[in-house]
Image (cartoon, rainbow, N blue to C red):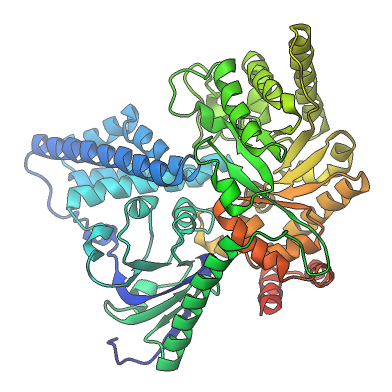
Length: 572
């Protein structure tokens, strides 16, 4: 296909909204470059080559992680941390070096070991272990790329505006991406995967799940990528290109206008939806005022424990929590107790054991470490002296677990008061992240002060899917019938007890999902601060009555595709 070829439209799933215009640049799949024919004559030289490549990749992991951390802060900024740790795993390195000593090329040995590891993880019954298979695959890929000496994204620097086309894209590619990259069209991956999360954080349009895009596209062809509609248009007709450029410019103007807007986040017919922000650190708290946040809906407290050899003391935690409480007063601050598990590992001395990805994640981890949990709760209680702090427990499976957590909270409160501390009123909430909590929301609502629905985890646990699996990418930022029904059940159960419900997952700021969530009765939306202005702008253009009608229509549908089409038509 050359630049005069017929226009073609390819459909995928939008993972990061926006319009990008540029020329196609195809990233080669590294796997096709690995030669298995020639065996090394000198294993010693291959070992040295492997070890040198491993050290270079390890250093790059650390540099890239530091760069993302500096730009995006914890949360998004900690995405690459676990990669450096796995790369130094002694058992994996022994397996690779054994294959090299037995005559394998370094590239082949690396690919073999990491492919076997990722395959085992993908087939594991433990869902959080399944999720980690993509991390292992990415590490092996980066090692092979280093050994082969093939290009990274830096090769497009200075080549004008480009749309990257690739079979797969790792988060490393976005760590220090050139500014002339205007979009990503990728065959695999999921909208809640790490690469997609970083694309959204950097406001780069991304479309996933386009079959055989590498074969269909050609380097240098003019292209338009629409991350909102999930379309890649190659060789667009002149009028299509002109329309896309106008749309891109309108979006930029609208974004600037939304940031400048400071009106109340309420619908045209008066339904207010509080817009809160998710935070992981006390850095850059001033962005809350710049973006008009109504408070903090999710303080991910576990990030205070990252990058430390020992846990922070009660005083360390108290000072950090108090900073946020004072910065937002009198606006509310919801502190989620630590949610270790998966890639978020606790400091040394607080091992999670073999079940760190499920059984001891979230509140179960805390209940298994009561002394640690009591210190953690004391710091939160002390920070809430002014009365604007709430505590929220993650991954609560049901009422019995919630009661145990509340009992420990009361124990910590009683001790502090006996020691002479003056404490403020503190509301206690639950993260609804597993189906068992959603299905027993009625019982939980009797004893909880509020709910916050973590749609990312609830989606995975409900559907039994892997967030990185492109075969399920259509679910990533859209709700299947089961999810809509669970959200409705949670909201109705809470409202019967006059308890508010928030959503703090990726859906909270998604343009198509917001009208549906409002129609289902969600009271608050919590998101990264950067999304608040645009979400406020969207809400002010909505009618609550129309949103209610939209929700009822969605509840009557039977497939994700039907729901997606309904939401798209409503947006139009």
